[in-house]
Length: 146
Image (cartoon, rainbow, N blue to C red; front, side):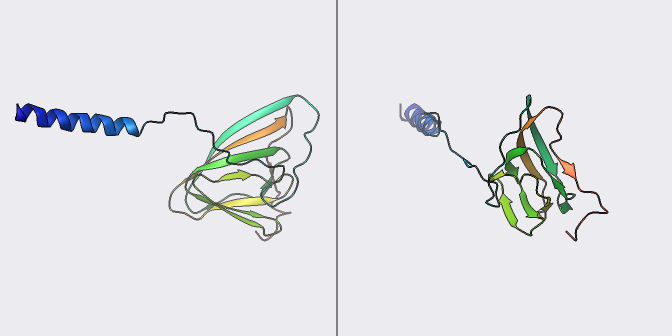
């Protein structure tokens, strides 16, 4: 009887502890709610036109610097993995770690750098309009020293 009782108790304890870790209610966590980009500037009004939503997952290899670019569309994202530093044409800097949200700059030249040893993965949501680009690369001849 003792031999059967002990494994049964251990099994019951294991089952009970597993159930305690389950989520019992829906949880909503606000990661970002703002009318300003990460540099503190007010986001522009939405343009007229047919709306187009774009969602991208961007994977930036370790030790990689992105090209200087700007977004004419309002966009926001969340860094899923890794680290990412974003630097504006005015040298404003934002350091992101996994789990951090970002409300991107609009119509401001900037670039990102993954200085880490693992890929940086970010999901970005663009709220734009049809027939308008979501990213514009700066011509190398116009490029600043970034």
